[in-house]
Length: 307
Length: 298
Image 1 (cartoon, chains in turn purple, green):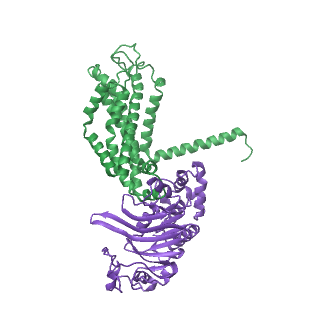
Image 2: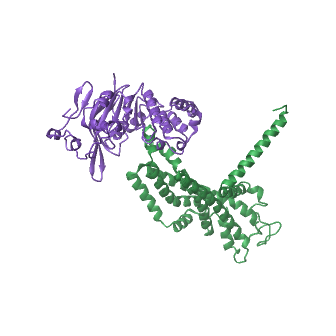
Image 3: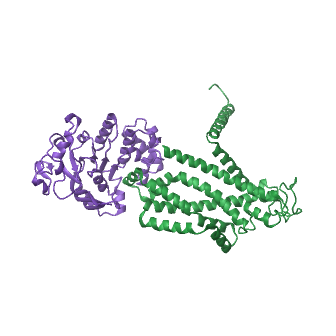
């Protein structure tokens, strides 16, 4: 399959009062056309930063090194205007906190209209029916009413669906969904996941999530820890037969698996060795050496010398 | 509907429309009386200005009466030192005062909004530069400079507008700037950027819409202040002597014997008009402030 996205040696550094902080380091990940990837890991491990870096939204906020090839072009050295035209139409982000991702003083429908008008795919008159069609597609039975609602008149689940409608309105090739099920009840969560699965049918998707069930709608799953991918492979393998001690620890902390949480908290020391070692039950001398992603079965890679 | 002639149907529709508009009007008056009062006064003032030739019994510079007449049946507010009808002057002066108010407020608010918006949205050196520039203007004592400008540029209505708008954009710029840095950090701005919208579009569509309440409130207050500043300049004799405004009338009363002869109707009436118009704008701005407060509670 054709390669859509190829991230090579990505390093994102934020300037902080305590000196530069490396949020993502030496990250490599590929995504084929039509493929979907779930990104998991605890808060602060760099999942959202990766998503924002791919969208080219970190300019002026963080220092981004490495290459991000999207359809063969490195967006890290692309001109601002070219990158802007890529956003929305070729790749789209469904941001966190859906109720705050809409302009509070403009009706939902009008905001979706703007996507078409801004890219000149429709004029003011023609955009209305297109937006209503999108709203219907994401499950608003009464799309005429939904079109006229203000963001504060919608529930979290409705906002999320409207946001997905907006992000996919221009049929982008890549959809990055940043924690789309955050704060939703179970039924709404399933609704949103079903919708995302349907929307990712003919496009690539990166699903950033904390929900251990969400990766099942994706082909592959990557686990991130302290700015690195520690395990990546087909979803079923990563979820059911994880090799990395951190992934095992994550699944072991689920309520139905004994709630054995991982001791300690995420290391801020980045000395070149395994970043998980001071929380790891398998820690040994070898862990102080640099760890690379090792292939342990077809398409399944783990960054651990004990795997 | 049973068989009814077209005329009857028109009657019914008209009747319904009448009832509806009366009911909804009453409802909106009850809902916010301050706005209604403000709008009524303002509407009356604008009508007065627009229909001045119809309302005023004479031309404002028509002479032909004895000077210093007391109010009588023909000259409702008496006459001035040159035998001109004061009531007609009062009516026609509304045009100049309102024009200066609207024009100066609109220009100064536009400058202030643009500078505040750009400084707040882009941050960095642009912000430092624009805010430094604003601070510089804020430090200049306004009234002396206004007098200096006005006397240098010569007496004309448009010079008064120019002087007021050049000097009055700074507080607006400051206020808009602080609101914009608040708005630009809201998550929806980032999501709009992620959807591929340009900075210019985000600034002038989303950010402006979210600062609208402040802009409207500031604008209506600026009109009132600009009218009073115009009155001040006119009182100091820096207005256009051929186009009398309310402030100009007070100035004339002061300089041409109105005070000396205790003809209070000469200077109290234009003063009252200025006050009433200012109050109307303050009432409207109060409404805007309240709406903004409620929005923040949501």
